[in-house]
Amino acid sequence: MTSTNVSAPPAEQVYVSLGDSYATGYRPADGGAPAGATRDGFAYLVAEQSGLRLINLACSGATSAQVRAEPGCAPGNRGPDAPDPAGRTQLDAAVQVLREHQGRVGLVTVVIGGNDLAPCARASDALACASRAVADVRANLAATLPALREAAGDATIVGLTYPDVFLGAWVSPVFPDGQNLARLSVPLFRDFFNAALKAEYEKIGAKFVDVTATTGGYGPLTEVTQDPTYGPIPTPVAKVCALTYFCGHTDVHPTPAGHEAIASAVLTTTGR
Image (cartoon, rainbow, N blue to C red; front, top):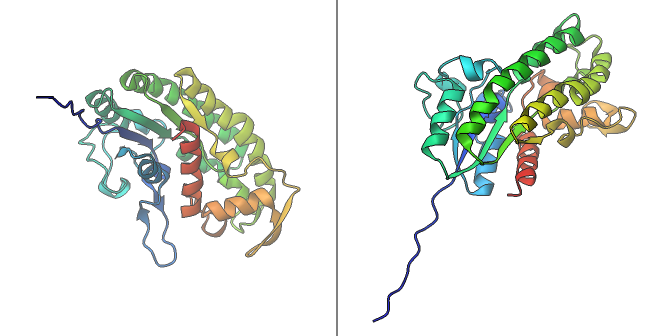
């Protein structure tokens, strides 16, 4: 009588997502659809396309300090099917989840810092405001990421940045000096904000997805595209108008196409 060895099915791998409204999939009211978190968010797309079970701990509106210091996240600020944080900070909840799923963590993503930087678009001295914001984000990441790495073991961690939504000020009537703000934003994102984020993620051996580059934010402002709404405008501005709601609504969140671009960049970076 022969015996047949039947191997057990592979254990389900999880994907732990931390951050702000980019991770929850929030979008403003658009085309009659109500505002709120949706499954258009990049984290949901990454999970679906990579076959991972998403545990989304992100909270809309979170700053880099709140990830590690502010407990709880109201139901309206969570992504679809997100677990109740039960009074824990995002970091504490993530550490617990990572330890409970040790050996079965396929991916961790972090997208944070946008809510620290966003107020600088309307500050009287945008560069001074951005300088303070970047210093705060960097300090908070330095206090957060090592604990995340320790709990995650050798699992892949990916840090993300954002589209340069300030480019949308080029066409927005909300900003009287919008073209100048757009010009200033390119080196601000490329050489300052994103460089600081990348340096902190690299300290813990995390990968970094430069979403600004992915969404065309470093292209020359002298290159012009004929936009259906705004006419001839710089190509990087046209791209941010298509991939976020900033140009038409002064809203920093990605459109569904924007989330698809971010998800594609994460999947490419992780080889999934």
